[in-house]
Amino acid sequence: MDKGARRHHVPTIEHPKYMEALELCYAHINRAEKGSMVLVTGMSGSGKGTIAAEIVRRLTEKNPMLNDWDMPIVEMIATNSENAYYSSKDTVSRLLNVLKDPFHSVGREEVLEKVGIRASPASHRSITEGTMRQRVTRLLKGRNVRYLIIDEADMMCVIKKSGRDEADHLESWRLLALDAEVVIVFLATFRILKLWDRTSQFTRKMPTVHVQRYVIEIDEDVESFVGLIEQMCDFYRIAKGEREKIIKNAAAIMTATGGVFGQLKGLFDRADERAEAMGRKTISLADISYALPRRNQVKRLWVEINAGERALESSNFEELAREAKAARLAASKKKVGPDRAETSDNADTKTDVSSATEASEQPGDNARGDHARPSKGKGRRRAKPKPRLPVKRA
Image 1 (cartoon, rainbow, N blue to C red):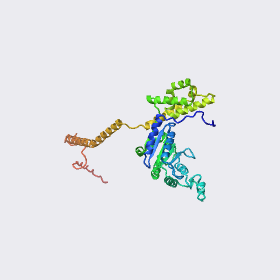
Image 2: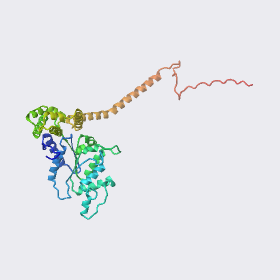
Image 3: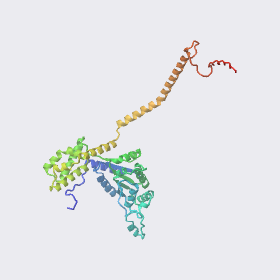
């Protein structure tokens, strides 16, 4: 056995959730128009990478390479090679390398040497991002690229604090898809939903495929998950007695893994490593217990699951009907409201006028019936001038 290789090989299990997401994803990608994007999202270990590999295999059979220059399908990872933050310029630079840009890609010396051109020491650092995007667009068209698959696309959410909004990165991918007339497929966790749902344009025209997990509240899902545990016991050659103990704790295992197949496989891999380190040929329940994640890890796992699935909740007819009814009721109130307000204002004005009239007809405090303090203006009584006193002269 090679160094670092596992002693038990676990093949790809075509379980129900995997097959459902695979067929739905292939249908969306196969029928997608040029210039559109498709998002495949789910928990870490839900099977997004395995689905992408099968999609690539199917699309390759349908779109074979015509020559060495032809590249119908291009795959890359949306990570930054320089630091932990996402950089659109770095991503475009690496995309040029994947497309084998003959003038500014890795290995350009060998490419240009065949045609008698000496490669210059220029690098992508000395070229603006706009120029590189133009070259990417031309290369995508020139290499006959139809599908561009971007893994770990949720790295677009990890950016430095700058004047550029993080949603601009996703918008730049959309413009690239339109200019190059390609279909871009993103593989990401739930974290990308805050960018994907920023505008309704993505939700209306860009389909989303959710690789679902097995839910403990659904009996069919529980049966399917128990069947996965039994298959894992077969692959790891677990003895019958330990197998029964493990299956009895299926509910606890399902809670610890979130009902995600990749998490289940990782649990058995860690248990097998412990069993191998202890000198045992098979896994026991004690090894499974040792490999269980810590409490804080389980809590964070379920926080991510609940937040992501709430963000993916679809509307139903009853909810939409209630919203439509509320909107119509609000519109009717808004339409009738000003008339009613005008009527009430007129009534208040009339009341104020009548009150003022009644007040003017009431006698004042003096004997003549005048107001105690007459208003200024016409009809005001002038005060009599005070008599001047005689001035005594010396």
